[in-house]
Amino acid sequence: MTRVILLSFVFCFFFHTAQAQIPVFRNLEVMGQGQERALLNSEKINILVWNVHKSEDIQWFTDIRNLVGNKDFVLFQEAVYPQEITDFFKELGSFEWAMASSFRLINKDLARTGVATAARTKSNTRDVVTTVYTEPIVGTPKVSLYTTYPTNRQGKKTETTLLVANIHAINFVSNLTFFIELLRIEKRLAKHKGPIIMGGDFNTWSSSRMSMLSKLAKRQHLTGVPFTDSERRITLGHPLDHVFYRQLTLVKKEDLSYITSSDHIPLSVQFQF
Image 1 (cartoon, helix red, strand yellow):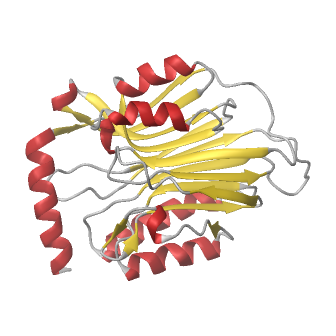
Image 2 (cartoon, helix red, strand yellow):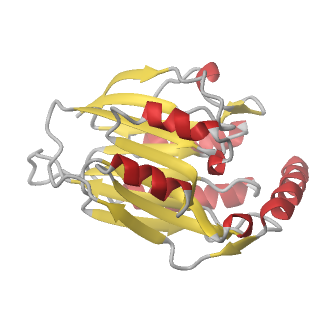
Image 3 (cartoon, helix red, strand yellow):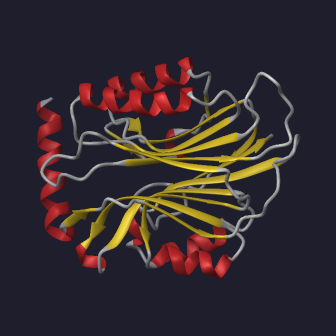
């Protein structure tokens, strides 16, 4: 607990003095036009999951253009709206873009930051879960975004839509607070009985947090994509970023560790539906 408090003070000092956030209350925006189509059985699904560090490195724009060409879903954490994200996805033109905001950035003209999910398929539903607890000192929450997409799967007793969960877990808090917020994520997942893709920055920088997340995944019948330590960000000996799936087949993952325009490594995965 002492280590958590110390880290939080160090983090918050630099973060707060540099950006001075203002919480927002209307925190969901949907832009762009995805295709009105159902995901098909045996279809390949390409996804990208990336904490983009608020797009602070200008090289990010070049990297993301190179990365999203074949992607069906893009899950960002620490996305910034309306500046960089809006301009970029207007260029693409073929994505629906949903963004759940957690706070505003004074040093970026009150632009919102949070998690954002882009999809080539138009979503059926969009839900936001905001943490009850906030990061210390700065008082900002974290958000997670849950979007569902139509499929052509048949089932009288089972859910046939695909749920995509974009997660940015709370960070500088006690294990108990982290566990409580993780249970709120699980509560939303448990409502869905069909296929799931869940990805994001889970801030699992300790063995206890890793254990909590692993147990959640087991209870919800989710399988983790087996990235190596060199393929994702490691903090205090543990990975922060994860991709989980259910009722899908893992085809391949891609090593993108050569990308350095964020303090996190992007995760690229292909599933078969």
